[in-house]
Amino acid sequence: MTDTPESLHHLAFEHAPIGLVLTESRVIRACNPAFAEMFGYERAELVDHSFAILYPSHEEFVKVRDVGVEPLRKTNRYSDERIMARKDGTLFWCRVRGHSLTREDDPLRRAVWSFADLSQSRPVLGFSARERQIVMHLGEGRTSKDIARVLKISPRTVEAYRARLLKKFSANNVAELLAHLGGMPH
Image 1 (cartoon, helix red, strand yellow):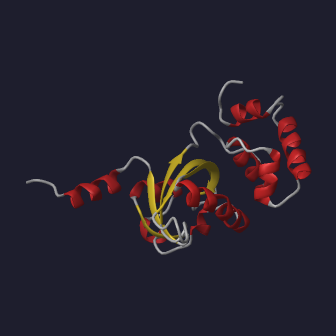
Image 2: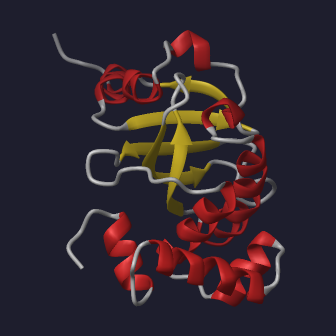
């Protein structure tokens, strides 16, 4: 018996070693078992629900939307590393990559995302919601001015958070901070 292209696509989706999810306007329309398991849900608990249930706070769900729209519109690629929440409330780092199927008019109207659990190499430390946002953007190489623009706060506020994070983790610079947070040697 020869597999059809459709059956092979189905097999790839169902057995991919990373979480895959199809969204429409930030509502989960389909996900694979790896995605559901990563977040501690059954698939039926996720399908047709807002992605908001997977964020540590509603504020973070709202803020991250604005971060991803422009890159999707410009290059149809988006990636970051962020902290998400499992069903039991535990937080974990994951790598997120996205591709829009409706790039020109509304990049989030229909999109495909992959999620990789980074919790084995990157433990979640005691961050506030704002610290998580700052660290996420620092990890993407953004400047304080860029971060301030995205988060709609002053560059001085970003600098203050950055300084507190450096002190908190005894890091001399952002590279050391990120290496410490990523479990890498300094």
